[in-house]
Length: 234
Image 1 (cartoon, one colour):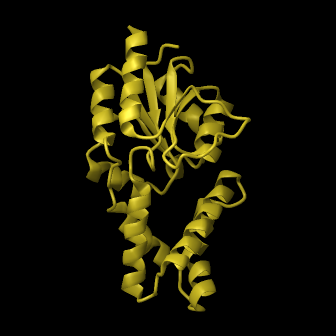
Image 2: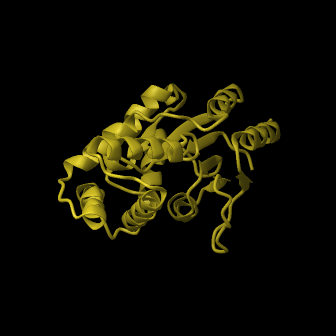
């Protein structure tokens, strides 16, 4: 298959989201003098992951998530009442966490050198994603950046993919989605009908109902795969 269009996810594909989340959460709890031992951090991570899965299934809106995420968690952990402004504080902290995964910048430079067109589809808050794109220096590599909160559609809804394809007049054949997420990214790409490269950063097992064209675990492997694709394109 010849590919000329690469569509990237951001978090844990290009951005080291786990590291950024760790720093932002640590700073938020420090500011409010809430203790954050490892077991509490893990409870938050599992709780937050569950909320995002609910948004992907259409059971929860992003506004509801941001309104209640920390309010409910802090009440459950400390019996302290807080407002939704704490979530906004957290998002502001997270927006300054623009750490890239090792080799991510080199991957983008290589993809540009090899002649690939590049775009982004990402779930997340506009403020957070837009600022991190600017701070990291990777924004100029992309023709179009689709942020779910801007268009009101979440991956895996195929319509968010259709939004990009309509804006850029792209063809499904020749497009490759480069993502880490199973429930949102791989499922959405398969439902929309485009091929995927799975950036399997957490070394998970691929569900039987999903298929991917390529699988890598780091950016060295991703760069090698892009070189092979470019060679076969020639």
